[in-house]
Length: 351
Ligand code: AHR
Image (cartoon, rainbow, N blue to C red):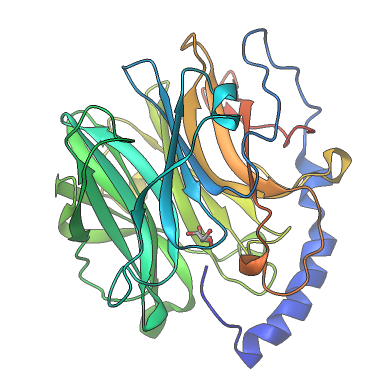
């Protein structure tokens, strides 16, 4: 999420919030909550004050959990043999921001991945002397247990454009690894973060020219005074690749959009991707869930259900900047699949 509001965006904020109130996207597009099938009912909240959650189910029988902490100053890890167990699991700080220089500002949205036998954490960081100089970085751990193991800094993911860039996520299709991230390009597109994809030559390096996948152009992507596509997350199913992302300001306007491509298509071609016209997951007043987003995906213990992992707040109105409100909390719920092979995220279920 980009920093301070300029005068222009303050005006947009007033208009945007009115527009956000008007859209009422949750009332218009929500389905009645479908009860989760046995074995995948969870008690939410999974973790209080843990935003941008990432849960990774490893082959060692553990779920690994990381997320953004309100202080934006460190990377924490938990592990448990069940998703629900993460709630009470011990939380270990595996890395702390630098006192000076890069990786010394805001620390945002860590993700933990296991690639070619090693652990990697992808995250965004500002600089100690410029907290808004946000760029993507990678840590690596070769030990079996990433909570007790040694983490080394692989450094910044070099991007051709040196601008505000955040929320890196990685996935592989047919043996090719990709990176998707959010980045702005003010001279070309003005204020706002867009989604880009590039192939990776190793887990901390992209190769080739990044491809623009999505820009925030619709009202639901520009509500609350922020023009935002960010927080990409990938789930593959039914021969398709789905990239969900978050849009608008990180308050009650925050919601999820989705891009879809065939797994056999050229994923580095923008024309392979189609974008849903409206949000696929949004605030829902009837269950008192506001600003759901910056999601990720995992699977149930029996491996039979796909699980949506996301954050939101239990209240709609925030005083001051949403980034200074600490109460984005981690939640999970079962994903249902439509007959056409696409995910139906439904509504954010009640606590
Ligand atoms: O939570 C910190 C940042 O807020 C995340 O990196 C971004 O997705 C959101 O705007």
